[in-house]
Image (cartoon, rainbow, N blue to C red):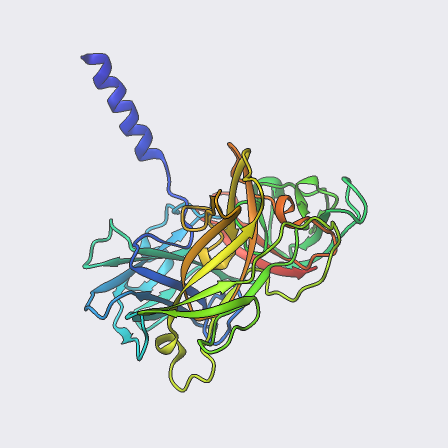
Length: 417
């Protein structure tokens, strides 16, 4: 009996020491269309400058007209999105949590929903320091049972970042890959050990599965750190995102084959996609995986007049992939690969398919293949991969000096290929 007790104690101790890694995501099936971004901007990342006049807007829908009491609390995070060791009064002015009092019922929609939103910072909550943050959203003060969480960052610009994306890589020239190079000017920041004090994160199209962290400078010259010819910063070029527009119930817009009304709701059947076999790059305009809520000719707040549709994705192929799984990639699911975004194969129809309940607007998506026992997706398996593909690379620079207790976000730079 005693060995079992010791084993149980060890397991409990290990579980306590496991630290959560926060990602923007939804936990409750009745919550849809969680969005966080800069107020008044549709396509910018949720990053605002410390002590500026910029505001973040967080919004989501609950799929009913029933009354709910939602609130949120703010947590400061390390560079790797684990909770920092700071107490709340070290990173916040005002309160740690607040109720969500701004909500509106949907109007003349086939799906009933209530739209909730709040802004940050506000009269109750303001930020003292830079870094990564997460807003944990919950119901009825049940802090330990979140319905959703939204990640964002506060930056205090101190460094200068200059960079470029090129097709000449150590793997091949003008082929399937893109190399990110950048220089970092410290601009007077006192750094004794750059390898340990400076933390880097590089994301392609805000994806988290292939983000690059824990990289060291190629060389250091005074206050300049250079990250050049780093093999870890070679990314698959991939292919442009597919786009579709369901902002109208009357017409099949871009990427849509047909809109049907199947009582009591609308369905959108997207144009069938094809596995890329031509191995030839063709330019298509996209917004690198983002989405925007929109209703054509809306006369009221689009957040409460846009309806929901059952959207059908279809990818014909004679055989399923037996060496991995296929997912839909994009911001609509916060670039997460889970049951929501995983496609199913229909042997009778000879195709992969997925049906998602989405709010009216414009969307981007890709087909991501994940080999067995892997967590990193590749686009090439379905879409092909090309150095010409337009991608957005975002570089995050964190600094934690000797003896300091948190990672300051001191610089951010987005580079378009």
